[in-house]
Image (tube, rainbow, N blue to C red; front, side, top):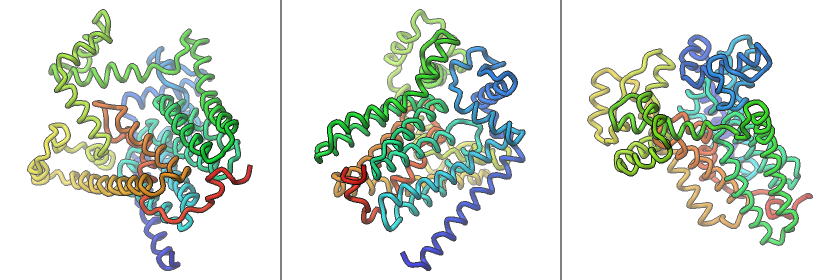
Length: 444
């Protein structure tokens, strides 16, 4: 890349970074706009409990310490100790998105000597309105995105050096990610399966079968270590060896409960009461879905679309102005009628242009991802490093989009935003470096 072009590119990137850092202002001046979610208050309560008593417990709900894992409350408690106010968590999380940019640059540099992948991935990530605004929320998603993309970087370091220490650190980082956000726990197993597939690919290239087995054991054991320690704590404190029942609770009361409330025209609390009053809540849920398959499926598809597109402009507008504008009704009503947008704009809802910009960015990003998949699976499928990166990034993105189902929103895509950017950036992949190392012939 020519020096003049490189200077222009960095000026553009620094400009995008500067625009993102402007969000520090509402984060510090109106912190109440970013901690008014029920889950946010729960995390803050657990953090305060740690500071007050040194124990992981909640003053609001005695069962909250079994439902929530300690990673994010510990993070918040450290913020309060250092900065004397929880509002600085929003600022730190915003800076974590910039650290994610650095990590994306490092990953791209490992696979593309020209660094076109690095620059493209950084730009796609920086223009993501979803990653920018949701970083201010006192929620787990942004910290999780940092841990997940860090784990991928560490895995790349292992693949390019064959040093087991990087694999251990990768596993520990995934385990820490699960302690921050329990949904990372099943994702960890998906990573192990994909990693095993890539390592088996290398075995067929005359790599040692012993090294194949040992590498899987190392990743699995180091990743499960922190999770196991938390399970041991739970059985000692609560008499329950489970990691966290939050996933089951979300599926029962939010994915199903919200759908049922909408279908029946009742409140969410009334839906919860009906579920809990049934002799078997599982049987009740299954029977209800069987009797209402079409509306239930429609609500789930709508939720997945909300996560996939991540166009929560109403919440972004509220973060800036303190007022939430009305919605267009397109996603909620599952209608593609552009007249709805026109009507909103005529009524003075100019914030909707923010949503349109976000949608255009999504179309660009997903188009680049499609190009990446076509190129990698069409021309580079025998390249272990590229194939591993693409598969892990793709599965992480799909998992993040689908998992919330009908309860979906753009916030749930935040952990996968760096992976979306990386996949988009890999559309600009050029000549790979370190071919001998990737094939398993490098330094031991």
